[in-house]
Length: 315
Image 1: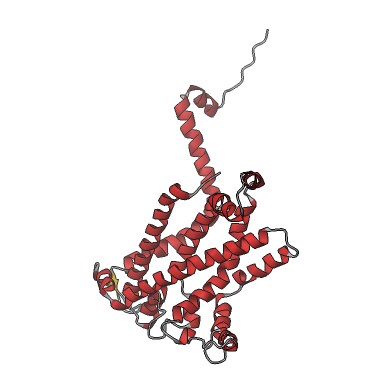
Image 2 (image 1 turned 120 degrees about the horizontal axis):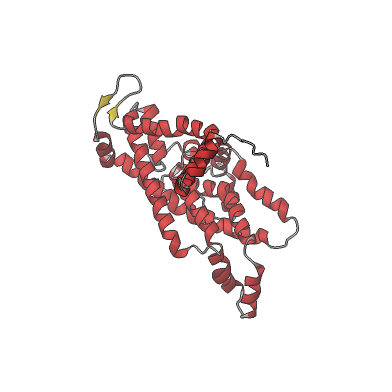
């Protein structure tokens, strides 16, 4: 019998004598490196254009800066002055006012459309596309269209109300109706997005659940509240979280429809950040206000994620 000598690679010999925990750690390290290589094309832009500017704004928030002169360290003075500023307080109040009107309206309207377009009706695919069209339309276009529709003098809405003998309000020219005007326009634009998300959730509900409910004698309303809404809760949770995050950052429609007026009746937090930066040259205070808004949105989102264990049903 002839014996042949085969050199053993150094790596193979090392792996042969390594303990299982060491091999597992080595494999995890190689896997992490592979993942990092694939993430780099998107992680680098995220780091340079999102994460770095965020912490740059945090650093700026502790300074007084007009974008031209050198920064002056003021510590937490910007945060204290903003917390005591009546204009900022009103901006937060208007933002919460917007959310209180927008969120129920867009969810109920989106749910109604999803339920209607989930039924077997003629031309439902065309209707789905029609209702989704405003979602992909520019906010400036939508805001200008609604500014014309709600024009107190020549708008179609007030003209239609006049046919029925109803005197229309001043809408975006009236401090009492400026925010409702923005809420109506925003809900109309986002109905299609909410409809698509809830429609996908409806189509994931097994039909056997409805058949079992019918056998038990459940009517349409009982099936809605005892079958549809509970099993639709994951989609509802997603819609609520996304809508709240977007609602806190409302700006485009406010800027195009009212500019924050009249008399500050529709000024929101992002509008205040914009004005502080580009109108008043207070970049430090604007950065502080942006971080206040970020902490608020983060806190609300965390509360929702923790609280969803109580009401979201993952079938």
